[in-house]
Structure formats: structure tokens, C-alpha cells
Length: 179
Image 1: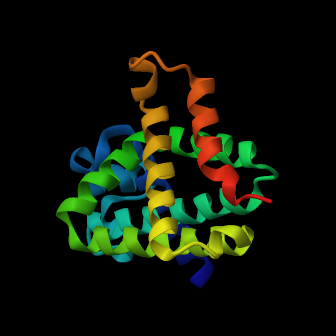
Image 2: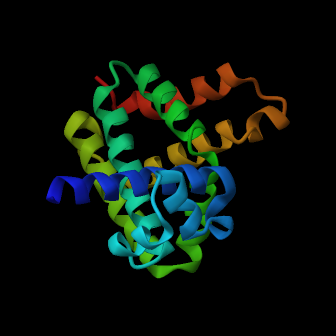
Image 3: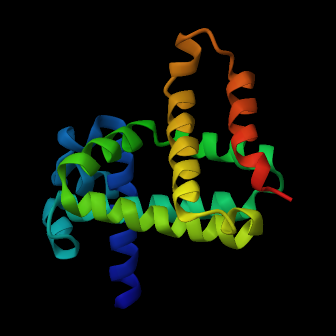
């Protein structure tokens, strides 16, 4: 019975992530999430209090995927390209995340926790990064994260900067810390 509950919950989280990516947080409703997952609308409320609760669960899932990207990358350029692919598949979700982080304390808190986990994962993988002061680690993460979003949202391209140049810039941000 617990496996069925966990499977249903995961199906709802996956459906929510897809809805948030398709139409954004504000346009998503819990009935659409339940229907996308193949359930009746009331099933949603057996697993989640509200739309914010499932957004936070979808973000936790996204964070786990990002941590996998960090740990699986074979080289600095692989890390950059894998991160860009991950951000590409979640453009609207990440835009929503940035917006909600400013307006909703629970999302801001979850984002801070996610970033701490990312910093820990990077420090565990790259000893030179771990040796840097916390402020430098945070600034590096913020810079890398924001520039990845700018690449996948086309901001570099709109300024006439080709994709390979942006990838090279991102690689240069990470390279000083890699062996």
C-alpha cells in the first residue's frame, strides 16, 4: 500500500513539474496536475496541501537532478553542457523559481537549502572549490547559475554572443576549481 502511495505521489510531482514548465506556476491548477498524472482531482489533496507544497516537491526533485548532473560530469566542459541541458528542460520552471523566491518565504528557504546542497556537492567533488571562502563559493554558484539561465533563455544570443562563446565563458568560471 505504501508503494502505491509513493508511486501516486511521484506521478503527481512529475505531472506538476511538467505543468509548471508548460504554463508556469500562476497558470497551473491542481486539477490539471491530477489529470496529467491520470488521477481524479481529489487525489491531489490526499498527497499535497496545496499548489505551493507540490511546487516545493517538484523543486526538490529538480535539485536531485541537478546534483546528479554535478556528480556525473566527466570534465569541466561536460559539467557546463550538462547543466545547460538541465536548465534548458526547465526554463519556465526556473523563471518561476526566481520569481517565487522573491515573493514566497518557503520557496526562498527551499532555494537556499538547495544551493547549500549544491555547494556541498561541488566542494566534495572539487577540493580546490572547498578551500575557497564561503562568499567566493556562493558568488561563483550565483554567477554560474544565472549565466546558465541567460544562455538557455537566449539572452546571450540576443546580444550577438554565440552559444560556443557562452559555453567557453561558463567553462572558464568553473575551470579554476577543477583538477
